[in-house]
Image (cartoon, rainbow, N blue to C red; front, side):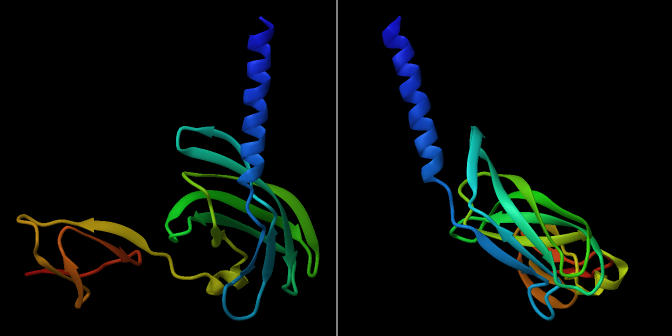
Length: 178
């Protein structure tokens, strides 16, 4: 019986050492990425929590600073990328009632199917005055044809052959097949 308890303690110790070893360095992200900065986020070291299959959960201490001249409320999707720049996870970041020059601290949680290396913020909700700063939204659609292998043009521009995943803005588009 004593041998069994010792084995469990050893396994727990190995788990905590492995989780500590996988922490990643913190990152600073300024939004928007170009032009006059409005918000600066500093994400601390990513600390790995419980894993469920390939899905890993992480937390980090986050600081957000309002660089704008007015109070701000905003919600962002947080997208995480691996070393090959493939999106592997996501989370959300919300700042509420943050005055000009004010800095707030909070904890961010997110999940990823792998080890995140870089991250990106995409605005979901912004004050009306800042909506022009947000990049245009794109959606992905899969275009297929029977038979497959047709040359595809989207809005007059060559896009490859079917089946093909294309990114377009919401709205009407012209698809041509040859």
